[in-house]
Length: 149
Image 1 (cartoon, rainbow, N blue to C red):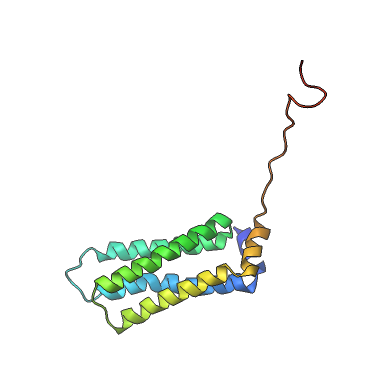
Image 2: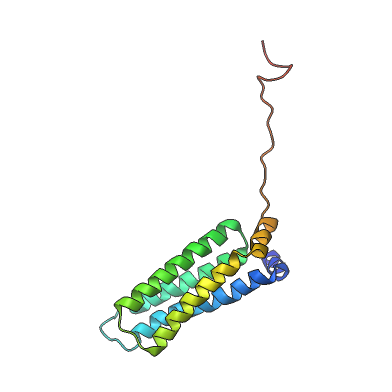
């Protein structure tokens, strides 16, 4: 685990910006869901949805710190689902000024943070930390001067 902290501290500024901005979005996401249901009694099962969204946010944060190419792809897909989920809740449920501000915060921070993930420095850092491993070449037994006759 110490290796991840070292890699994070050595990462470029664009990667750190994306993490900070996305962390704000991931914290605001479950708070936004909670702000929609905090005064509504008919929605009794909303606490489970809020907990699921908090777990999704924590998982995305953990995946981002892993600094793996597949983790970056999952973070992007997770961000897309978060934005779609928040838009769905925003348009379907009644909302107030606080929930509107939280929804705007989540959407803008998600878009800006995802942008910083795709900046050249961040992309190169992901490639540098995770080099492509080429499989060793196995010589073909039917080729060359030692082939069976």
